[in-house]
Length: 315
Picture 1 (cartoon, rainbow, N blue to C red):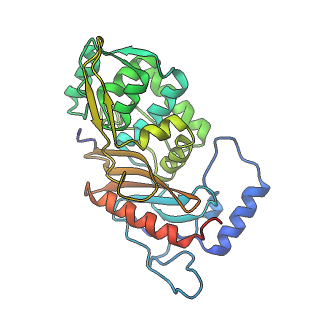
Picture 2 (cartoon, rainbow, N blue to C red):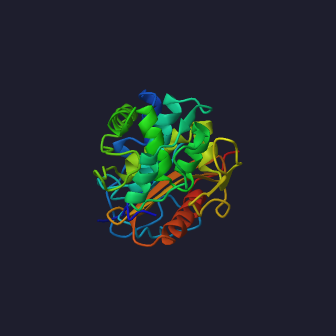
């Protein structure tokens, strides 16, 4: 993969959650604006504690989140289970491709065919980026290229899609940033369709990326792609056979996981956007700036298990 590469934890009390739910009910918000209001973010505490322990169970420590930033919330109730440097701007590496896929799905038809050019292959190779082993002259559907973007995090596929549906990288990035603004992602600025360091890495926050993940998962096509562990493209007259495995190690291991995206550069560190449906609740989280590739998955698993124990199951 390309070398695409302070601090308390914020917690919400049950009382604050009720107040937040009341506020959300009373105040209409824009169609794409999601996530809890600023008033739901409680002052950072030096000692992490359980946000709302069930009666009789005492207070339980919050699992550690060693990355530079982390955020986890319940999309249904707005409860913020964890907020660590969630509003700090930083590079997010290939988490950028969630927005790339989202924009493509609004610009293209899934059965559209894209012809791979030498420039697409060269882009991935010259940057030392992860790729889908595409070759110039191959013709693949948008659907298959989206699998290549989301599973192996292919820079050759994202370059091809941006080239066609910008058209060109500059126009495509403009569409990404316009979409980010429409979603209320005020601390996000994209510079490419893949999050590579060149020409610039762009920036976002754990909070903004969690909002994006929640919106992206409303799209059934993107949700299906992001939660797929493997995708096979059979050989045809216009392309070779391809087989791509999802880089998200949570899939198939943690209950209810829906994806969403991994990322890495030396500047961004190891990043992860993740979500899971647990007992009638959808939990969405983001980890940024982790120093260990595997620890981000272990941390996400612990956070999901812990957060699901804090919220009563839907009857």
